[in-house]
Length: 230
Ligand code: 13P
Image 1 (cartoon, rainbow, N blue to C red):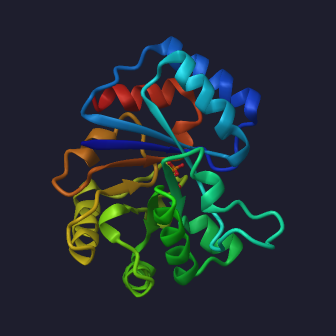
Image 2 (image 1 turned 180 degrees about the vertical axis):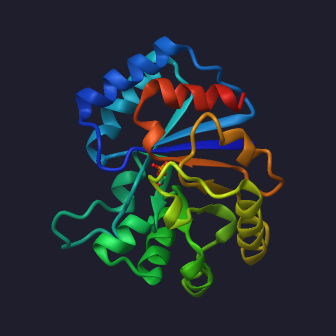
């Protein structure tokens, strides 16, 4: 199985997200039973998006982009894994933007992964080489079952630049991530993925899919990525 995961980041309100779905459906992308499509949305979009994918019969699974590292309780404003359990099957954790802008540590990311698994949500754990070993170690220290997670190698320099790294180099790092996680979980690549390069990454022997930022926002570009992998 290959995976295409979109990450809208902090873009699209409810209305825009529903228009995006209508536009995507109208493009009739070539969905394949060999490729799972997951779209990680802002919290506010998820409920109406879920209704609409069911109405349209689209084979898209929703995810979120973050979750609290705390359990339910007195934490004003936090969205817990328990709340998300009714809405999503996947959740991105540890994106480099959250580390940089919100000071998230490897321990917090491991706590999030653990709470997600307790609520039957698959954590999609983002990694880059400077903290890859530390993050995976933290997962084991917090008793996170890594075989129930997804991992994504996202080199910071390749994010939003239009300049992905060489797929062969990416495959070296994803192989290393696989080795560190007992080769028990899917490992993906993210960073400037487009329809022109997605297949070059998924054709590598240790890259199970792609995480797409910029090109997931435009239905035509996202549809082309889906079709390019079918
Ligand atoms: P881009 O596809 O815009 O490089 O973003 C990658 C990313 O950060 C996905 O999480």
